[in-house]
Image (cartoon, rainbow, N blue to C red; front, side, top):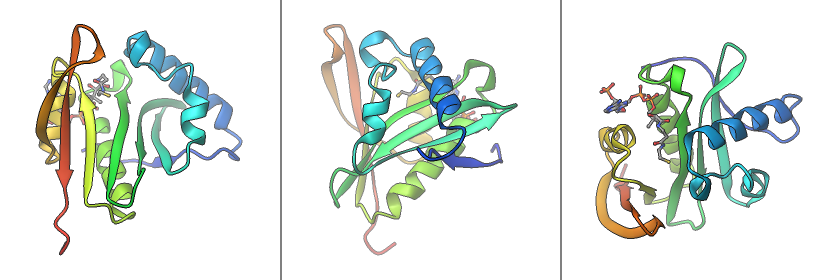
Length: 158
Ligand SMILES: CC(C)(COP(=O)(O)OP(=O)(O)OC[C@H]1O[C@@H](n2cnc3c(N)ncnc32)[C@H](O)[C@@H]1OP(=O)(O)O)[C@@H](O)C(=O)NCCC(=O)NCCS
């Protein structure tokens, strides 16, 4: 697995602007318009009980993961992406592992997420880290794009 520093984004940090710029660029490149947070990114980050972790490589954002914990019972992974040139090097797994750890510190019992079943690398990664498919939601992203709802439960005794 890729090692290195995974950082929580901080509004008061001097590199806030460049990090957000990198992420918005990646959003535009990787996700179709209706799935992209490029235009609503700042608003998403201002939401209470949400966070974003990212990893830089050679001075630019290589990948990021967004998560939120709307209630004390459950959290969700709202975004995960790794720059094309940095894929298959363990960054996605390291980011998701870090986000799961963050959610666990909130003592939630479950983490959920939605993913297009056609995104095989993502579905495989979620399964690798223990997520299970709950159900298929037809038309979730758009009229012709479905989503798996996936979940990861924690044993209360752990
Ligand atoms: C999904 C994504 C984040 C994976 O990032 P990554 O850094 O390449 O992933 P890793 O190198 O950490 O791989 C971890 C695991 O993911 C799965 N995986 C990653 N790439 C894969 C591929 N091309 N094919 C099949 N499985 C793959 C594997 O299970 C892999 O474990 P392994 O190396 O033991 O086989 C990346 O492909 C991506 O950004 N995709 C586009 C955005 C997206 O689909 N996001 C999720 C929906 S919000």
